[in-house]
Length: 471
Ligand SMILES: Cc1ncc(COP(=O)(O)OP(=O)(O)O)c(N)n1
Ligand SMILES: Cc1ncsc1CCOP(=O)(O)O
Ligand SMILES: [Mg+2]
Image (cartoon, rainbow, N blue to C red; front, side, top):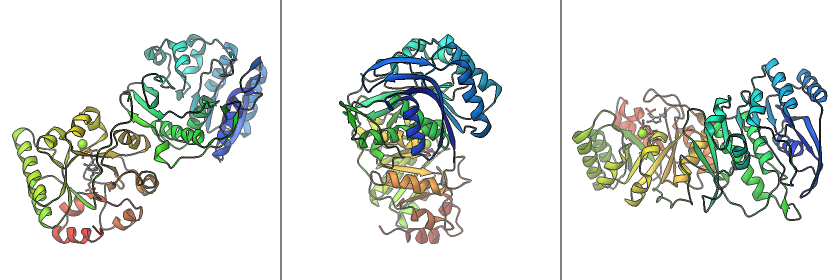
């Protein structure tokens, strides 16, 4: 069992702060330790007073817990003043805990209570310890006047600005993730028509939970999905303010955010879905395309990495002609402009490719699109485009390409979430030794290179592989 510390204020209404954090941590079967920074007198919509916990008691709480309840993650909320900042910074400097720390820099409660007026300068001793900070738009403005570089200069590594683009989108609340030296990402959650209390606290606690298990981008994705589910499922309201009661991992793709490298104003028009992909060989020459078309394969991809200019263009043109004649779902890897020019059935793009491709041009041309994914955030990037299929992999290690291996457990998990909405295919290190376990995931299609192209008898291998699919 994992232990999570919340260093935050006590809300007499039991809605936000330590109470909200504890609800989240308990829901995920974690042991919760409560380190109080203040006691507040507030109700769902009214605030009366706040009493700071003095420095010695704050120190005592931290020190006594360290002995028997070492944290696996820490969530930090209300800090009242510079004295508290220095106590916690001193503690973290002394004990190199090496655990994820999420700081939600709450300035005031939605019930109206002002917690502090801590400036960026005041917080400076602490900022380098945080894995990520999660201000809302007002807090972000207060801290750095929306100048993210100013935050990075203080040692902050990652900032997740909640609702930072609330006015710019018709369908979504848009959050912005800024990680030092990486391109910004925008997380779009569908607006829900409920006034909910303590979403900020709950989100940062969920993030602390998911950081125990996931890399930062996927943890943010999972926290968003879980919060959307919790908001959707809550029916408890006090005077019109909804209270979050239950938290769990979501397996419903509708709860997941649409993630994009730019702000989306509204949900995108879906690409037409492909027919089931079945056996999906990925090959590097016109010769292979011709041969496999002759052997009855119904989905093919040309993946050429060593041609350019006229030679490349001619190869793609010929492949389109061959596949058109054989009624094959034919995808062009990478070269979306040529796929449009020669009216291929579809393009296949990786995560880097979609950042530079003109997705709208592909959509308008009526060309289908498949997208590679290696994790939760990447499938949310794919889902924001509403593609024709989603590829998952590499499932196993492969010599064909240097690529992240995701494993069978993730395949099984992701198929459960994605299959309802998209045709899927698995790729990477798949051959006769493991195809049956891969297909047991219900993924429906397998893309492969070497199981055919490096087989002793490629025709026999193709026929045997085809027999796994009932198309
Ligand atoms: C079906 C299928 N899935 C994944 C890939 C990999 O595409 P990408 O990430 O663009 O990498 P390259 O193939 O360009 O190296 C694929 N080609 N096909
Ligand atoms: C192109 C690609 N993308 C992810 S893994 C992979 C290579 C698949 O080749 P193989 O089937 O030989 O492992
Ligand atoms: Mg590519």
